Length: 310
Length: 310
Image 1 (cartoon, rainbow over the protein chains, first blue to last red):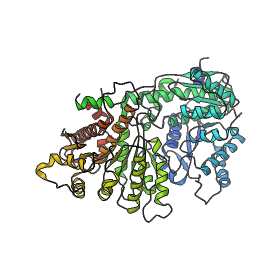
Image 2: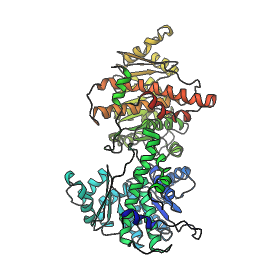
Image 3: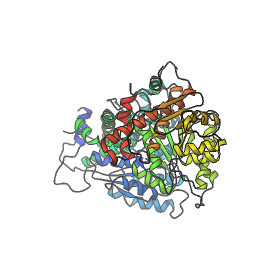
Image 4: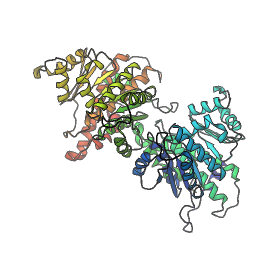
């Protein structure tokens, strides 16, 4: 079966028989004094693709701003910086852990910042999520955490890392992989193997996705503006496809079980990469150099219809 | 080569080979308890023209409001007023200085306020930016700072001051230049010379731009509403053109090197003045007396296409 047909298998049918949340409950951990756009782009993209519910876990100051972008998100102001002393990291981690039974997937990192307390919380949340076998998409400052503590994600098959050019090189360095430009297309596979099969989404002029066994290449046309935030759209979209993968394997609908759970991270990443590029292309076509990441989010629905809707 | 053709040389081509940030990283220092529109207009105009990333550095209360205008900005709540005592000006300046290696250009002043601590921080940030040869666009309360401490910018060729009528007169007074209405068109040149070649953008019914050697006059048709905020659009647009000038001289793309670095401030100012007037004209045509600065920002893309896009 072609990759695109496999992806179509994972898309929940639209049915009046379902209830709230069954088509995806996503949580983004990130959002700090400095960064609020990134967790918004990620979580709202998840909703725009079709997740039923999206949570953001962030600092209180970030929460007010993110709530103001849209009332459609549930924004929980649980995280704290090092200079806040009203809560210990253990309290914060336990607080966030209470959300876990309600979730299909977590995105860790958009707008997290590199504050020590914020990183420590993220680390503890990852550990709790692993106990529940929850799919994890890790990006941005979450990758900075992984770069410094690769052991927390190594060998966890439900994790997807989404490094850009600079982040990819730093991860390779940390994992003692010699980055070679003339073997660029093999690097994602090598990095995945170094992480014992964690899925790697290597973003760039074209995207390479690998779980160490196979490699998907994504090179459909994107826009020509490199504004900050496009990577956040990608993580939100991956998250929704991962949630749909869980719904598929929980038999939310009748199907022939043609897709195995181990295939889902590669398929979700492929689907999200193609879709992000199409959103970027069509928003760029409308707005040219003026295009913003906000504009691209409006293209998620039409782009999904064009590429994947049956 | 005509000025307009020189400006076209500086515009980065659109290419899938670039990565995030290469087409411009801009930072606006301003935004206080009292003023949040000005830094938003400036930074968002920079994005709408085509900068890849824009930061705002401001007070915490201002940050929440500015973030809420759009998730496309990165708003850092680093500045403090005199009556806040949790941080010293040195700590604040050092915090902001950490951003400098990531920037092509800084705008200092929109919504800064005249609080002593805010001005002291701006002064320290200017000193740090000068150490890195970073282009500086100074407006509004930043000009109040310059008026009281002209030595901090005098002789820095990478600085552009954008005074309105009142600010221009005060700067002339401070620099012991006798303002004469019947020699109005020579005043920008004289003021630039008094600052040892800092570029002066004298805004008015028509705009005069001078680096002390030559004078550009900008008099294309603008709108007939004088709402607050149009000057902030101008600073954001100058900033993006300055960032493009840096990208040009960093050889982001192949070119014949026809523009020298010393020409860029005059060209960037000319391009931004013509574009601001065209945005104002076309928004005014749509909305008449009801027109707002927010409406003008929506005209940046189409106006740029009309005047400059090749």
